[in-house]
Amino acid sequence: MPICTFCGQEIENGTGKMFVFANGKVAYFCSRGCEKNMLKLKRKPLKTRWTEEYRREHKKGVKKAE
Image 1 (cartoon, rainbow, N blue to C red):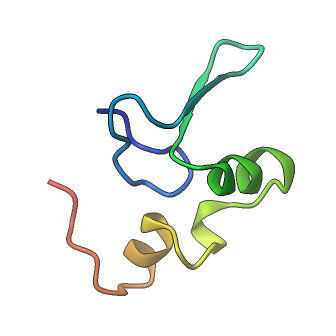
Image 2 (cartoon, one colour):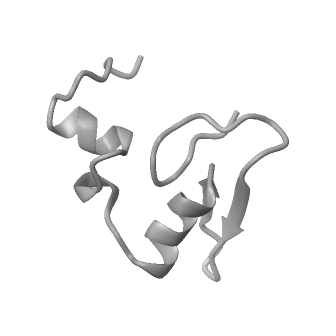
């Protein structure tokens, strides 16, 4: 299962969206909110409070990735 490029959650099969940039890089999104925050609003996951990356950086109760 792919992981959302923005928020870090696992995406179930048959859901989400795959976006391919012009340079060939692939981004996976679990929701429209993640897609909009990254592509249209150009927000960084590290500064968005509800993302896994933010929680990991600020030690907000996320288990370490195995």
